[in-house]
Length: 120
Image (cartoon, rainbow, N blue to C red; front, side, top):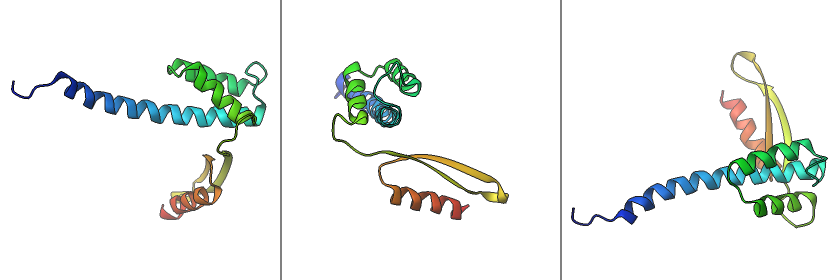
């Protein structure tokens, strides 16, 4: 097969797998940061943090990355300020809907949630 390269095939698969893994890790880091901010950075005293740390380690996230996220959330490092916000509204047919959001920008999130409610 002319032009056949095993690395070229691996590269395409790896690109997709790495993107999926990176997206998951970003979400987990955000959740760790918020849990550490709300309940403190001690894993033993904060059940929400303990649950998300266990989930992160099961997803093969390194312990160093988890510790940095906890430090950022506990206030030891400067980082993004993520807020946990709950919005309430009515969906199609008058059904009440509650939306829990994790955001670094309240104004952008309000606009997106409002757009979703008015669109339906």
